[in-house]
Length: 138
Image 1 (tube, rainbow, N blue to C red):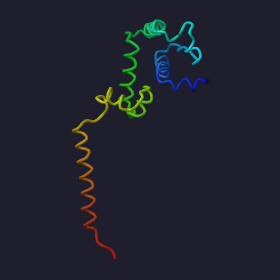
Image 2: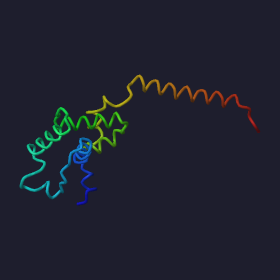
Image 3: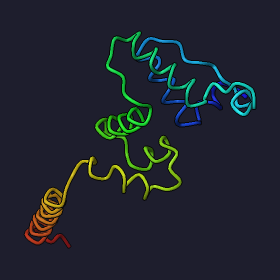
Image 4: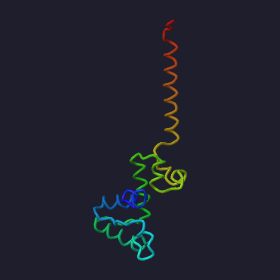
């Protein structure tokens, strides 16, 4: 497997991004190593210990990997990533899971939607009125 293939795994991609942000080295783990029955680099205890070390090295208060996952999703939404792309990054089976879990964080609400529709209809009405006043050329 190539490193690019590993980047298609959302959690590994997020872990690599986080490690780069924190300035710590991310483990380079192949799919074969991940499936090994020997010592797994992704066992809960090994992952937790690496995460603790990364938080300590960055002099930050630790949060759990689950909290990191939600933080990642929240930051992606704040950055303007659309729901379908976020669904893919998060590894959700379908977009409805993403919308159910994170929809409340997405921009816009009912009032904003109504205002956008009113503005669209007003523009359409203005264009229609201007068109009816334009001289007819035969």
